Amino acid sequence: MKSLATTRIRILLGIVAAVAGVLILKLYSVQIVHGDEYAKKADMQYVKPNTVLFDRGSIFFQTKDGTEVGAATVKDGFTLAVIPTEIKDASTASAAYDLVSKIVTVNRTNFIEKATKKNDPYEEIQKRIPNTEGLAIAALNIPGVRVYKDTWRIYPANTTAAQTIGLVGFQGNTVAGRYGLESFYEKILGRTAASSQVNFFAELFTDIRKTVFTDQPVEGDVITSIEPSVQNYLEKMLIATEAKWQSDSLGAIVINPNTGAIYAMGALPSFNPNDVSKVKNPAVFSNPLVENNYEMGSIIKPLTMAAGIDSGAVRAETTYNDKGFIELNSKRINNWDGKAHGITSMQDILSQSLNVGSAFIASKMGNETLRTYFMHFGIGTTTGIDQPNEQKGIISNLKSTRDVEYATAAFGQGIAMTPIATVRALSILANGGKLLRPHIASRIDYAVGTSKVVDGGEPVQVLKTETTDEVTRMLVNVVDKVMKHGEAKMEHYSIAAKTGTAQIANPAGGGYYKDRYLHSFFGYFPAYKPQFLVFMYHVYPKGAQYASETLTDPFLDMAKFLINYYQIPPDR
Image 1 (tube, rainbow, N blue to C red):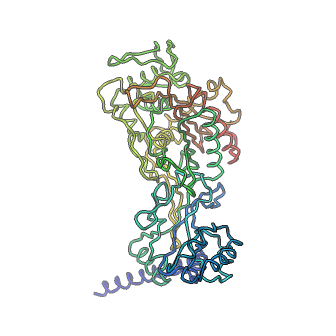
Image 2: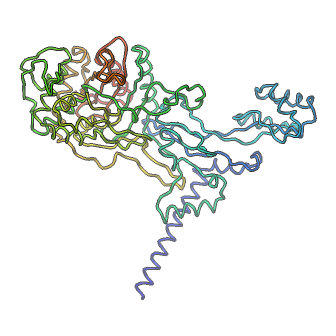
């Protein structure tokens, strides 16, 4: 009995200690972290009766030195309204307008018309009036004119990372996240009507219940790994690439392949979440980097090479006789140049981007082994990135019994992947063979004063480090000796990279267009201890057939920017 009593006392003391800890955190939250928020709630003289002010957690970018920059925040101001029952006649309405119009620009006809509606208790004139102007109007004390406190969602960076951040919209009578991080982290960012008006002690003990009994605090802010300068440079690069090649669509991602943290991701066409009234096609709100599948072409060849070497089917020194084509299941596979290359090395499969060579590696492995490795690379599954509506890859060809399907998959045709799944798979080559979860959030700051770090999860070793070292060496050789005829080589920095050109499937008649291509490019650097992996693609660029023509220079520009901006020391 004495032992049981002692146990109960310890449990009780533990709960008391936890409550005390939460109380301290809450007081800190009220007085320091959310002092401005509570000051606004205390200023109720301008709040319209029977209304609840909009409130929502914030989303932040994060600079390289850890400074947080607002990506989605709440702004407060005023709504201008008139009370027609307090306005005697048109002359009084006109005089009221003259006073108001000296402070804010409003439509005279609209103002007079609403102000003179007989027996009308309330008419709204204009929303989102800045605080200074709203208070100035209130100070005039104009009969029949009111200003009411208002709050709304703003995106200070406008179009920057628009699809990634997302936007809010009405779901029934409430505002909620509809796309991007706004949607994915709705439970964190959302605020209930009750919580926005609840008193301190009610909120305190709500937080105690969440923390002590469930250990699941809910409301908070999302701090991302998106670096605003990197994001802006990436988007300028996309705009310039689109302008030069008139691409139907395009996108890019910058990721830390060792942690899964994304520094930048963007796509065109895009939008400004502050003003969606001009958007004609709502599909632009979705994030194609996680929702759209593409046949990626030759950037898949390094994965095939890695699988071949790791499985022991081939070695870096292996050669084969390249006749320029092979026939499988009554289908003919050609090299991109239509040429036979004779006795050919594994290096040349990557350097010359040979389809027949990739098919050779697939045949040496066998269909089951190729399928197993590709599945281990995450091809055909979602990555778990913190974005809504992520799609799985299309890999039905890897379930086929026909050899030709595996041969084409080996050079990136016949299977389709989202850009983010492609980036996750290619990061395996850069990080020593580990499969990680890409993520945009780096930290969640809860309203109760606690934080949670977001990372890439437990890494899964899917390739030997010796394998990725070998493939990296081969990809560095591609850049140093082949890309732009050797002009892409950086004297003091090693870069591992590969281009990809894939025919675009024809949804109408089946098969592939003969004159439409998807261009892709990926590279990581410094190659042997990489801090960045950059991936980019564009759909149906005009005036060029190969990705080496359209994406090499944008990639090199991005690489040089990152090296300079982060002051990366030379590695050779």
